[in-house]
Image (cartoon, rainbow, N blue to C red; front, side, top):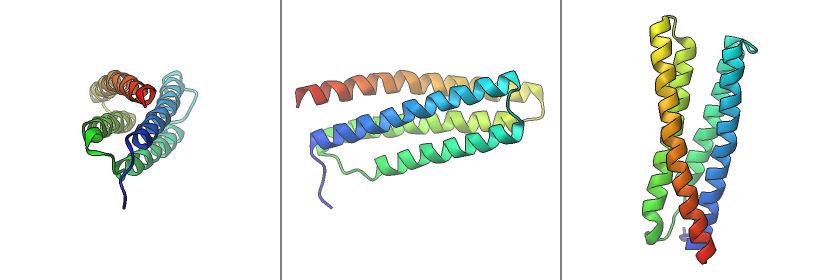
Amino acid sequence: MLGLTKRQFLKKSKKALQETGVQILSYRRLMNMEDKGEISLLEAQRSLDRLRNEVEDTFSRFEKLNPPSECLGLKQMIIKALIIFHESLVAYSESLLASESDLKEKLQKRSDEELLKYKELSLSLSREVDAGLQKN
């Protein structure tokens, strides 16, 4: 399989980051609905499972890309960001299933911390991708 050009890779990177941006909005909406009691635990878990599958699909498509050697570091950083986002989803899912309030709080805090790490990392990655696209 032939490798991608730098521009092709940057475009696909931008698309992956945009997909996860939409997924984060869905995630936040789900968290707010669950906090307000507007959604049942079962429905929240199902929605979270669908969201996790979407993130895994995004990860899988991105991981298969064959970027030029100068973009390997960027690819690894985006993969790292996707893993952090996935870990946030998993922690939140575990918090929904936790019966002890202390454990639930701890897992929700971990989920929020992972989400914040993802946001910070994805913001810098988005800027790097955008800057690379403007140069080409």
